[in-house]
Length: 308
Image (cartoon, rainbow, N blue to C red):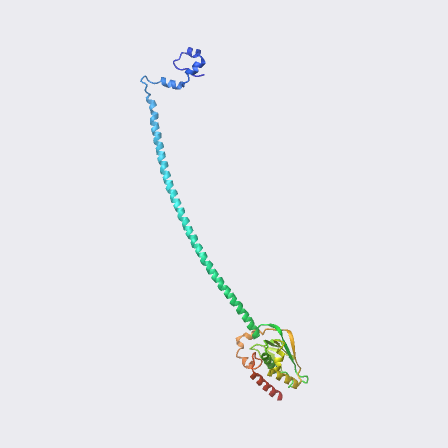
């Protein structure tokens, strides 16, 4: 129930119709009570003026807060601007560093391409040098070689006569004649003939490349089977060895071989210590490239020795 308005008679309040009472109390009873407490002059009590002072204090505090917020915001903005500039500077530095790295990569790539080209050129030169070395090794006898050619077999006479014994210069004459006939590689009893090889007599034994040889002696040569045997027979060496074997009854045979494999000479022949010690003794016995004068000298020596 609404409170009774001060100054209103209780009887009237109780007996007044509800609708009228609601209409009369449309204005807040608290507001009416406050209006009733005004002094006769209509002035507010001194106590009611204080909210204005508090409002000024609140406004001042609000203004202070707003100013502080503005200052702080300004400072934060300065910090943000500084941070942004720092980030921009870092980004630019990183971009410059990346550009330098790209430049360095480009230079290294060019250098690598140049080195690769040089390496390829060196590889080609190495292959050419290796091929040349292999060819030279085959020609000089320090590498094995396979091909078609001829095989000459010569043996001591059956009667055991001294004249019918195969001597070192007999094998040297055959080797020289094969070189003249166009042979590209020669071996005696499996010992490869090289510019530093030679057949020598050691007592009653023939030796080549410090290896003893035994009859029947086989001289193998790589060359054209269509012409090598015929051209050998036409040389002075071929004619001389044919005459010698016929005169003393020495077994002698020449045959074409479709596939011959001549081994490499011993690696020890490449040592420089052999120079000067064997070249004088072996120079005229089984040299790699003979001359006609060698054949003539061999023929003369052969005839003189066998006559004795």
